[in-house]
Image (cartoon, rainbow, N blue to C red; front, side, top):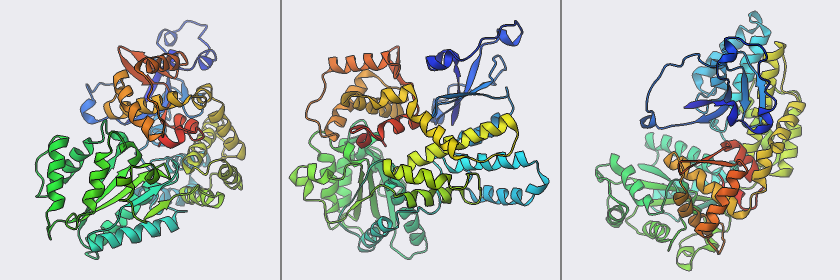
Length: 500
């Protein structure tokens, strides 16, 4: 996991103008100035080219919050380690050992500096409000969870079943609910209460072509005796066909989770058709769970595919204000860092707008960061106030970059989603790769026309001129964070269908 510093020239122009240059000459003023940021990336270990020791050959006394577009003063080195925990996606506060340490810390709070206690609570709240921090129990989805759990457990017990299709807009808890159910069923399997099963997740967004799913599944089965070699997609498909067509008492049930299933609808849809065809075989012991943002996806399919979907279709609706409030209180537990009534007021407002729990978490985390910065500046005990939430929400919606993203045309939106997926998959994006992925996304969005290469080039030029992306030596890079584009696209008619 990497957290970045940035050169001043990489900041938005509006912020560059606010930074005052030192007027007196000093040793420090001769050093290049950078800003610490909240931007996080996760990089594969094999992409680390060289491990180096960081030298203090720069000055850094400001923190750039990408989510809110704000720039605040910080001590040169103090608190950097604490901020690593605040902004990390992986260092979660909600582990048992950390909760135990927090209880011990609370017990000795009276003997501690009140400002230090307040800081620990605010930092813990930031950790709990991260999108990657998944609680042990998912609230607000009890009815949907019951339907999926009963259907899936019955299929595992019987060794067969109809596919389950789960739909709902981004931020509704679809994938998190399915994975929590699978963890529960794994516990029952380990206790020998249900037959042996295994599960594999295939995400349609992570594949350059849908037929790569064959190779991914076959490779995932290497841990079993019946699979020991990886193959290209064509060979892997033949092996899977043979596997599911052959009866076997010892082979465990395979639960195949097709996340972002709508992105697999490319070409003649033979990949999805084969999966559904294999599930229908009496010998397959295959159970399919399809997850997508589009509610009427089965109706958009060709008749041969549509007929494969059974009655197990579950729609995840937007969260109500009571559910949003309950989830936020669950995350924050006993921390008591929010002003009384602040969460309730915001939950009601958000429920009327989108009901997106991810937006609620991002806004509350940004508000908590504001309170944390106020504590650092004043060293006075504080809470997250309603005004902090309002300011965080306003900053997220008024950023010039967010305004530009919200105004994206249909093809600009598809271009940005395609580029983001190329970067996530390959570490960098190229125009050729984006064009190929765009053709698949256009079909997912239900559009009839694929833009020409010249049109895509013009899109790229306009987005670069708007400072939405940068191009260097044929490589394309985005200038915004995951949180920023999620905030922008949650209300975009096309973006909300394609972005996750």
